[in-house]
Length: 98
Image 1 (tube, rainbow, N blue to C red):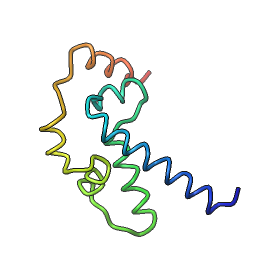
Image 2: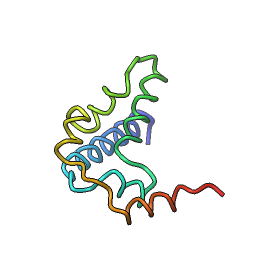
Image 3: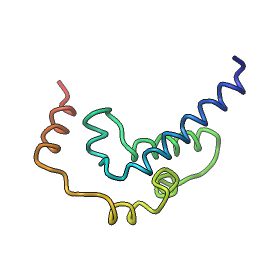
Image 4: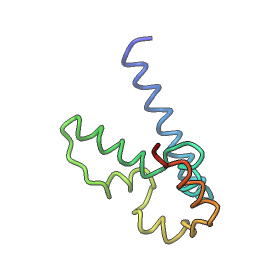
């Protein structure tokens, strides 16, 4: 497979992932962090870093809007719920450093 095709496939897979996360507003970021070690905010940071690597200035809020499909404050108001004590405990347990 040539590099151009590989990049096109990776981009398509990324767009599908972002679309899936936009549709699954029931899945909280803390759940993603607890299960997979990354969340929508991580994707936003990675996207921004990739843009900056290419010399494209992008602030964090703009990157988050690209991932969330709306301003983060709007997504948070519509879909984010308070983390349960169990979610918080799982997060703390998974992020302890030896």
